[in-house]
Amino acid sequence: MYVLDTDHLGILQRKRGPAFDRLALKLATVDDTHVYVAIVSFHEQIAGWTKYVKGSLDQSRVVFGYARLERIIRDFSEAQVLPYSTAAAEIFEEFRNRKVRIATMDLRNAAIAIAQRMTLVTRNILSISSICRSSNLKTGQCETAISRSTILVRRLSKKFRLWSFGRRPLMYTSNHQV
Image 1 (cartoon, helix red, strand yellow):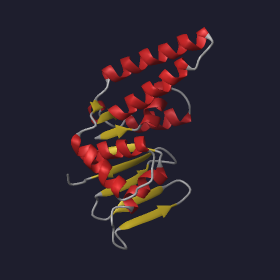
Image 2: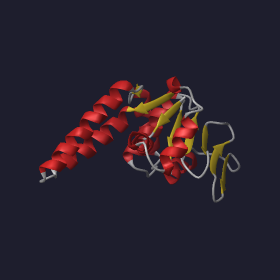
Image 3: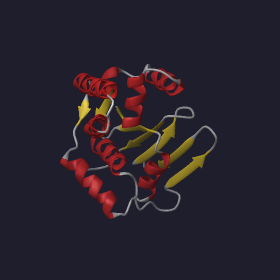
Image 4: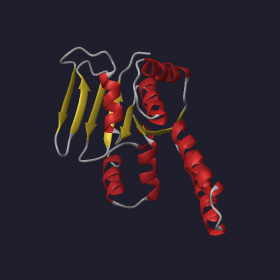
């Protein structure tokens, strides 16, 4: 089961470019019923396009912005959307209490994936690896292997895993016990 972060959802919505080609190829190997988006992505997209509309003086930009908002509503009405649950909020707070310093929305997406025991598809390498580092892992429990095309951060107990399927995107999995 996969949770697309906001960046990857945007890549799919644009339907063009090398990142789309790579992601579409990879997702073609996955059953559609195993692909989800988080409510956090809805929040991010709506907030971004609302700000765009609000700041637009040119009416053609306003029309474009509202069209994007309509598209977001349509896309999310057809998607499997994961909630920001109490379990996710507790995981979020656990990482905040450990002073994990990553963007709030990235951490919320990761918390949702952890709570649901799903894979988070993300390119936010530093953010997710900081979650792995903050998990009080003993020496040797968290391996980091970095090469030009692969970044792997993995907890040997398989609680946290981050891997690449090519140069990008990356995927993060958790078997966090809630």
